[in-house]
Image 1 (cartoon, rainbow, N blue to C red):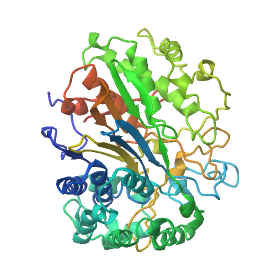
Image 2 (image 1 turned 45 degrees about the vertical axis):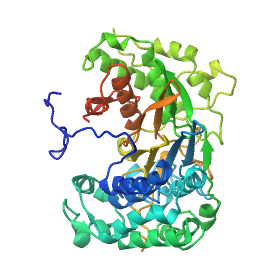
Image 3 (image 1 turned 90 degrees about the vertical axis):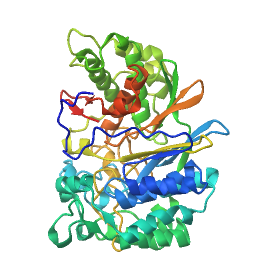
Image 4 (image 1 turned 180 degrees about the vertical axis):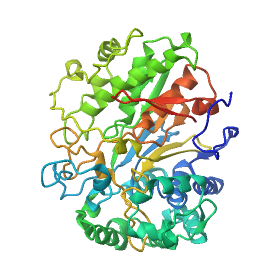
Length: 506
């Protein structure tokens, strides 16, 4: 591959090798997390055990992206039963939430930077309950054993890497008082190579080891969460934590070429949007084009614009409104939508379609939201684990934007999410704020099957760009025959519903 581009950082390593193995494997964004998973696998744990250890490790090494104060879609493929489930630990709106939560006294939308760093931005975290439910169904080891590697790493201290340094330099404005004490000691942001202690997070882990996740949802840690939020105008109560329940869902299933694909189901629109894009592209012979051709990227951008228009209009929590899933993925509907793509001229009038015409249901009112560039910059993390028995975990977890709400639980060392801002600020639509509701997400943990056997699993960080990263990697592998390293490092492009485009390398 020619290195005729400039990476976003001179610390990026585009010559790294692809890791291969025949027994088991774990992949994550930080070595502390991957090492924790590897330790559990070597000790005889399965993929579910290892993935849980990995998630706790990410809270240590990558606290700006995910942690116990956030959410996740924990997808499990169980090899013995050949079943795939999603343990949905997405955040939920507190009982005191209401549709106009993000409007000011004049009825105007509170600017995103302000509303996303206030107590009202924090939804009830669910990743702990999702992991615990998966562990009880499929795991083999006690929770305390799975927390231990991360607890030891937190007590030892963490060396800042270049990713943390860059994110601190870019998003330091999101840090609240207690987060600044940790990440900006003496008023200066931590730099690459600095080592900082995480004794408060270690304390949280030791409590969870001793008392289980009950300490988070009914006990000491939960009380600290509520107390911290109350000081900052939050609306969460202990009853919100105590009454939080995950759902265990079927993935959304689709096909592309000769492959079956399982991905996230609503309220994460990532899976549906990704499958829509792939089915739109399936109507074109991509093999006619070079992998770097303008035709390929043009088709990508047009398919994204069409699918994201539908996502904005029809995605939501299925417990609070009807969603035309069958219509959105029907061959007839997608054939009609595909007609909007032509090589003569971009169709600037592309808008959401009418999937209800292809299944029974009731049309909904679509409330258009203001474009806020800051919302496009959310981050997440993704990890995958496979064990020697063939079990797979593919999980995308998050605190939403870098450092979430910026609110660190006083004395407990973890930040809280700002996922309430994934709801529409202007009420009236399917994704308006309501108590007990889950906001729309773009998380896209995915497993691809060939002849009913898993052959590829993937996901990505990146907020809305997750969908673009996942489908383009899939196309690069399945249509252009790239190995996984090439497929990931191939330049990607992103477009949602507007005229602006974004590109990404690797």
